[in-house]
Length: 259
Image (cartoon, rainbow, N blue to C red; front, side, top):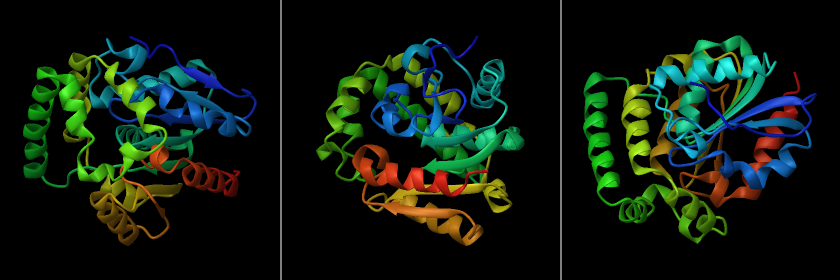
């Protein structure tokens, strides 16, 4: 079953830029950035399985990257720049692992590289099962609690938060639960070795109020100093909370790597 309803903005003759949203998001999360990005790039924004127009589509984590690559091939796009946020970043790593020659440059925003130990993975499975039960029980109440977590920093005070929150409320809880259990962090491989031997130009963005991903960024920098780790004034969702700095950082990175 194809990933329907891609948002395509810009001149198809320009460099393709694939943008992958996070959990509970959609292609619409990128709308405010597309006027600027599309001046230089052909922006391609799919709704990932269980989200947006693809809420009925259920794919395991390992199936998502091949589905995206098939769609891109059918569009006549052999290579592309790749930007993924959170869940989208994990899928971006899956794309890189499966088809490194098709990706020109990689941008990861608040992206988890994976669990190193089976015990950590099993604990996350149990955690995700509880999260799925909570969102199915009362989704509006779950969503309100979700954004009270410390990793979000002051996201709720950001100008773009209310529109984003209303989009989140439009999700199908059942589809989200399936996505979480089939494509959550517990289902992905350990991509730390991939980062260690990375040959691509990589930008890793994280928020200064997101302690978990500050630690991950520090580990990535120690593992591979060639990866450009940039801290923004934000929590986990840097593009919503710090949109001007986010856009400037993304454009500077892509413009500095033209080949």
